[in-house]
Image (tube, rainbow, N blue to C red):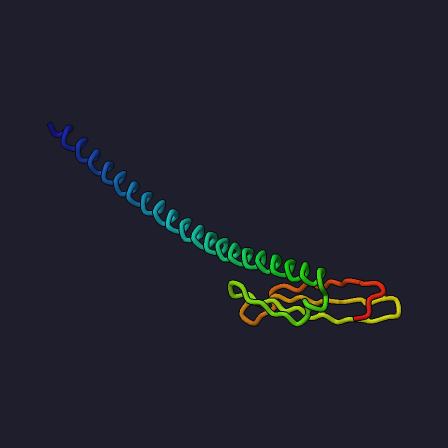
Length: 132
């Protein structure tokens, strides 16, 4: 009977060590898991901010292209116009260069977001023999 008691005590001592090792391992895995979640949340946040910026730039390009189309259709009417759409404003400046053979119209189209320049487009159109 004395042999049984000493054997059962050593088994209990060994099993408590295994239980402690399991708890420590679980805590380490939990810490790693929480750190991984924090890193992924930062990555998702940065990706979301970049997506919003990309969407705003795409809208600015579309607005500038629309202003360039209006300029191409009628350069004198397009000059000096300012539009506002979804917080973006478009400014088109037209400078004519008159010559004996015609007129070269140069346009600078700038899209602003909250007063800061977001996108700039420069284009030109030549009309031969036209003196307006």
